[in-house]
Structure formats: structure tokens, C-alpha cells
Image 1 (cartoon, rainbow, N blue to C red):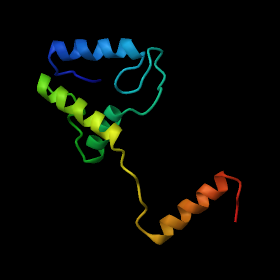
Image 2 (image 1 turned 90 degrees about the horizontal axis):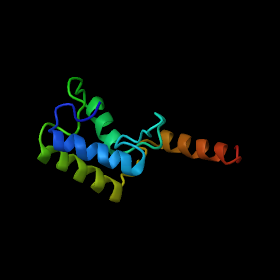
Image 3 (image 1 turned 180 degrees about the vertical axis):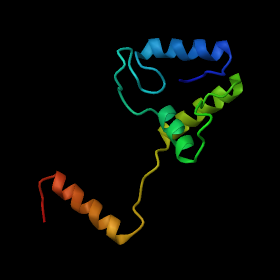
Image 4 (image 1 turned 135 degrees about the horizontal axis):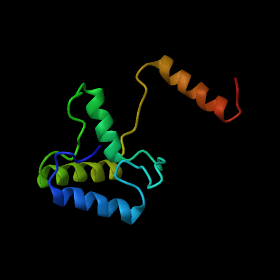
Length: 106
């Protein structure tokens, strides 16, 4: 699923990291269950959303491309994006949804 075209040293590093944290870079544990949505998974989903249907492999086919993907994931972890609704209707719906989930139905 990840690193199909990557050099063997990238694949080995990926597997070593997965063993160390008991989850691969996509946030999937050794038992197959998802532990979290990782930044690597976000990168892959962003490729899909942009219409890249042929190549979902975020690690690329070189050591340098894998390093760049990892650096991007680390940067995104340290600098999370905040979603801000654009229309007043969406903002109001979001507030209402939050109130409903907190037991403050209007």
C-alpha cells in the first residue's frame, strides 16, 4: 500500500518505524485496526481529493522523495491547519451542531 516503488532502504525504515510504535505510518496497528489518522494518511487522501487516481504512493521512488514526504508530515503535525467555515450558514450550523453535542439544544 505504501512505498511500492520506494528503494529497499525506505521500505526497511518504514517497517522498522512501524515495529517501534506498533502502527505503520498510516496509523494502522499490527492487528489491522486504525489507531489514528496519521499525517501520512492525510497526504494520501489529499492526493486522492486532487484527482490523482494513479499514484497514491506518498513516499515516491527515491530516498529523497520519502524524506520530503516525512518532513511534510512532521511539519503538518507541528503546524495544524484550522478549518474555518466560509459562509455564515455553515458557521451557524457548526455552532448548532456543537451545542447539540454538548446538550445545549436551542
